[in-house]
Length: 110
Length: 121
Image (cartoon, rainbow over all chains, first blue to last red):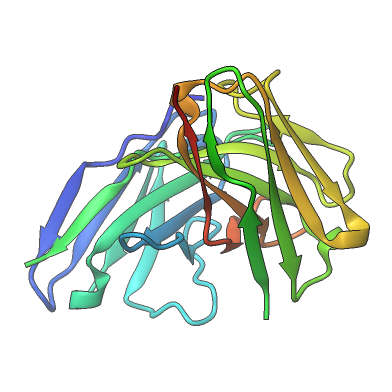
């Protein structure tokens, strides 16, 4: 149950696009199409942003998109806005009713 | 609307015990799996425990196996987490989270506000 690997931080200017990677193994990210992403603002609970690698729950802007290639999943945020500045966490199902999160990525909007 | 409200956190000495609760409303509690996820101060999220929608399967992270016990009271729509043999490294905000779908593979769509557990002498 090792944590998925995410970059510690990424940054971008308003209107630009950023991509956050999430690398696991064939036992989690690579083995299932069950990657989800969460946004967390300081002092707040995580917010559900993406599920099943690339699906958006209702209410999540289409500026947020997800994808996966092999053992690496990615979250792309296009048209960056100031309110997107937050921590982002990926999560993957890892089989046998266990889950693993990434270490988190701090997004700074310059 | 769906609501999850945790309670029971506090300060406890190493080796001590605590029982967390998560009161739920706004959905049919018995139709969805539930999880506990924790976050140590300044750190990332860590999945802790899961109970399947029908109660037939329970699982734990290796870091808490044998010390923590997840349970639920269907009659009260409440999820619990019993924390025993607590260690300083268990200090964290503990969140309860709801499965998006019955198969438990669709992510965690609703979260509580969290309850802080501090293990310190």
